[in-house]
Amino acid sequence: MSDKPILHYVNGRGRMESIRWLLAAAGVEFEEKIFDTKEQLQKLREGNMLLFQQVPMVEIDGMKLVQTRAILHYVAEKYNLLGKTAKDRALIIMYTEGTMDLMELIILYPFLKPEEQKQRLLEIANKAKTRYFAAYEKVLGAHGQNFLVGNQMSLADVQLIEAILMVEEKVPNALSGFPLLQAFKTRMTNIPNIKKFLSPGSKRKPVPDANYVEMVYKIFF
Ligand code: IBG
Image 1 (cartoon, protein in one colour):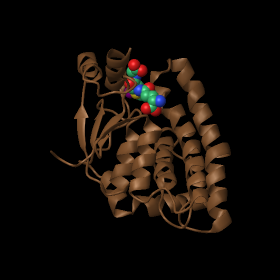
Image 2: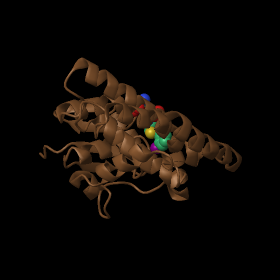
Image 3: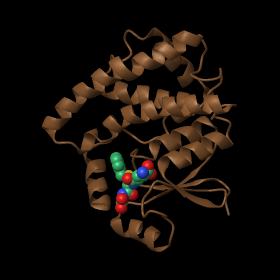
Image 4: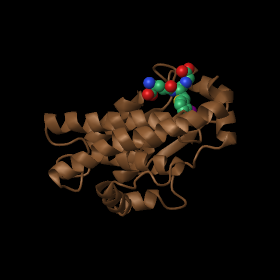
């Protein structure tokens, strides 16, 4: 049996993409068991693979972990991406929750009606700039270090670069006016593991399209 983590999810970003990002940033190879029918999901449920009948689920170190945040925190802790002290950890989780709130606006975007999408796009642009990016720019400026917490890469940095790239896919100029975040983006995307994840052929999933939306409806609703 392989001792690589096994990720169970659909063939799309959804709630698994941040887990893929984190494993990739940590340099951990993983396998994916992708399903594309409701029946396959039902089989996982009937095989007692899913504690709450939901995915993402990750088989790792003898566990069948569900709940995105639990998975992220376990992987982050295991690979030294959750800081050194209780305070580091609190800050890392605080920053991470902020980026998760921002990413949630984008994750749900493809499932909205066209009129709602127009509104959502404005909300993404506005909140990214005035709330989230402004906050992270301030954090980086206050301590002058390369990473958000403790002068070393953490879960917070990995989620922030994921969020920046997601926002830029929707709002291309979103980083204008944030010089420290622009430099952060350059630094993070040049870290070898991250560079590899951003290159063609990696396990990174593409921007959601109409086929993805149809598949998600078919499987989960
Ligand atoms: N709190 C859980 C977590 O964070 O892991 C929520 C998990 C969740 O909602 N899982 C969905 C599911 O399994 C799939 S992701 N639903 C079936 C059920 O019975 O609840 C759904 C999703 C996608 C894309 I795909 C965007 C947003 C949600």
